[in-house]
Image (cartoon, rainbow, N blue to C red; front, side, top):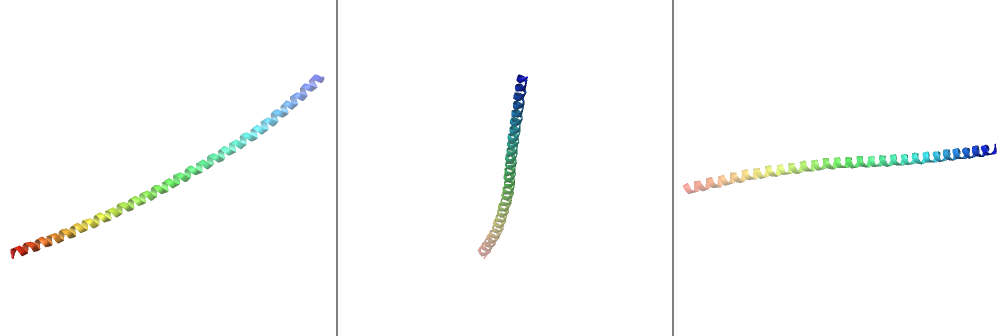
Length: 103
């Protein structure tokens, strides 16, 4: 009967140790899961932040590009106007020269 008592006592201690170990392993696993989830959330936030910045930079670049295009268009219109004006002046001068030669 003594050996049986000892065996049961040992069995109880082993069971208790296993339960304790299982409990602390479960806590550790849960803690790690929480840490991993927090890290993933943080990375996700960073990705969203970067994508948002990229999108706004892209929009800013489009606006700047559009502005440069309009500025170039205005310069072309100005140059075309000047070409017309100078051409008009040249025609006046050649007309005047022809009239002077006829006199």
